[in-house]
Image (cartoon, rainbow, N blue to C red; front, side, top):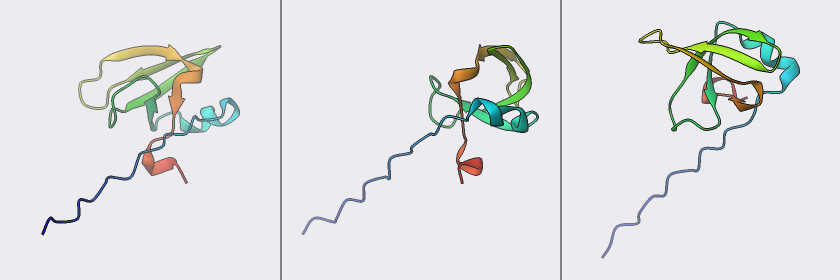
Length: 76
């Protein structure tokens, strides 16, 4: 008999509404185009750009505001 193979639940990432994005300054967010599990800390928002840094290496990154996604921690 073959064992029943469990399928992993598909991770659904939801975009952060632009009006709520300011509440996430200092918290970790995900980007729409990034690999699953990658997070950045949101530093500041200027116009339609967001400025981020990686939590571990502190490398900086600039992205579009529309790419900001919830992480699993803040999804609910």
